[in-house]
Image (cartoon, rainbow, N blue to C red; front, side, top):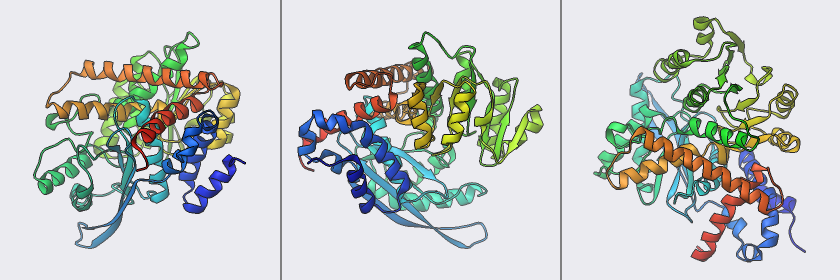
Length: 447
């Protein structure tokens, strides 16, 4: 008698106790791909799924550093090298107090499928630390990054593992990390993506995740002969992904009316135009202020300790902050309010109840592993440019990014249709990514 999904998940939970985010990510994928295993007994015989949920390597280390008062601080660093069947490990570094083993395993697991969907030769990994850059001086962040890279550099390389940025790791942190790697390894190579274009980075990389989520939404809308043009959009977050989601909504003729951070959200009924967005970039990327300041500056409404999902009349929603930020009751309210397009800019921002409601109602729902794959896709393009010591123009990178998002959308559509669930982008993304990685693992033997 074959094992059930519930029995498989019980084994995963027993082997990785207390890692709730990891269990959630695995459960979503397993439910989608279970019919695939019935059609492909070779995957069961090779125990592909058990191998796929177990990281190839987990690296954990201490990160001591000295604060501005001369006190020694200690954080914990991680790198999860999840799967390298289709290429070197690729995935971001997250610096945030919420970082732990379960969170990073969930992110690394999602990254495997996301990277497979891009069609680029990249495996999946993720890393980071429970260090919080918020409120730290540049000197403190530099000393932490140098200590962190003092251990990480032993485990990465441009043919082994290529980290990037994530929450808490922006241009400043990438610069400090790269500088320390270059000093320790005595080489200038493309071992990090998200670098400044002046020293090896790619144009459009900062924009790519937010741009890509909007491009994916546009492709979903095309299936109904619609577009972003004229649509009212809710965006959560106010960091890199949210900023450039708003920018691309504007480029495609829509109107974004919300942004948020951990303190609350702003609602600008007149829309966030380019001038206002430039001000937000200055606020968040340089002054590192709170989004509440936007309300005072532009006479917008501010809602402390709330998320933007109660705003009425928005056709499109882009959750771009963090995991599980959109709950089942909030999803129900969005549906009542007329939302019919949701594209996840963050990783797993909709909780399982919310996802189920979106799928059951048949709205256009783009899961993160497909909709936010633009960031890692453009990291792959940065790797390609580094490999041949060249730089592409902004327009060329943007065109390549858009083509990749079109292809990801097509792959999800075709996989969902082939396995009897047309229009279900969750199942389509999981199945398309799984089959590509599973086939590679079969080809490479039991390793």
